Image (cartoon, rainbow, N blue to C red; front, side, top):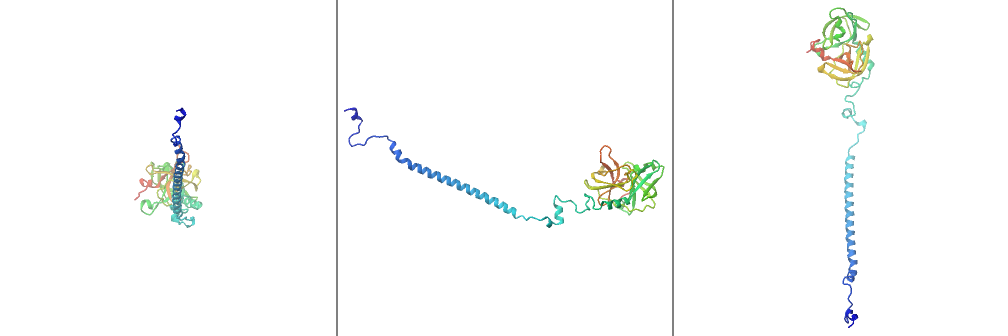
Length: 291
């Protein structure tokens, strides 16, 4: 037999070919279609999940907006006075009587307070200052009034000299009732002085409007304006930025209602714009007998 016969197939038998080529060619298309269908289903499933998630978020946002939309909007004109004062942007106290704002009629308040304020002169050392008539009933518990000033205004006349009080171009002789050098307070007695007494104010608070009245440089019926900057009861002092000058000593420091919160005493030399007054409650320590 020849080599060609050895490599030939027996008679009637099919020729031998590659064991995997033909089967692979006949089965590959169905496998490809199956994987394509599976990928399509996974894609549709993912897209559906995204749509459901987006729809849920839309419902949640819409629900929150609906809840916020259910809160009624209040027009400013429909808010009552009591409701308006509760808002942080509204003033703590309404109307011009607020102690934290200037009064509506400042000239009227100046006239009211200056009517009760006098000029005091000591002939011994030629010291000149101010004073005012105070209604002492809230302090002493009994009806009465007292002419209040600073100790340093009358100190030169404690042993000699004459104290003179001027009110509305009228001159009066005055006598010393009591004096407290430490707290710089004094009370005088003036016969025939007929002026209205000023009311006692509650203890002031920082930020309240304030007016200082007196006779700086001998100019009577002068007034300056500012606010309370500090209250230190244990030191017996009130500070304000109402301007004081020589001659203001002994005059009243009043609030927006015309009530006296303190007795003007001095200017803080080490600091510009700080004026010192003595609180009225300090009168009860020595110069007045209080309840």
